[in-house]
Image (tube, rainbow, N blue to C red; front, side, top):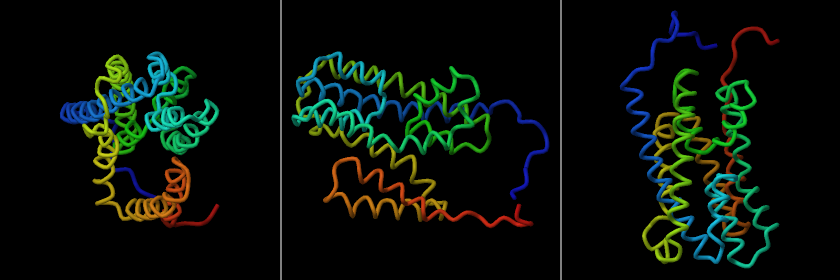
Length: 238
């Protein structure tokens, strides 16, 4: 068991840490806002009415799942197929929710709102912090900030409609994976366990990508967690 390093109560938030959190969350929010513009433009350009991507972003709030659902609809698929594809892709959030369950608090309102803000970014920032108070601060700061910027971006993109043309031509489709890579690379470099899990998950996802529907490789990548080795616990077994 790891012994505690602090003997006294936690001190006030460090201003440098707060500034760094705000700076990093602002950069992530900027990237998500650009991606939101792309999603809004793609959705309206595919023939959907403006209110669909806007409402979807507020209620569903899952970028990858939203892109998947719109792609299914624009390809001629029905609403049921679009919802199924989005749900399948967003299943990973169940694991994320378990990882931050202690951060969401015990009140019904805070847990409901917190669950809606569980994203790759909010979870990554929260788990990168060393103590519970800072984890909560990081989760809510990033979660609320990204939610606001994402929805504003989607609205702006939807209003612009098809005026942007092919959003992939501007590289907007690369913003989201680039942000995720930037978030995980520091941990992958320094933590051998995370590196093993990431390598196994990425290998599985790449191997099955040509043969399975969109979204399935992401789910299968979770099998990389099998490479996680629990540390040995000293003392008698209970």
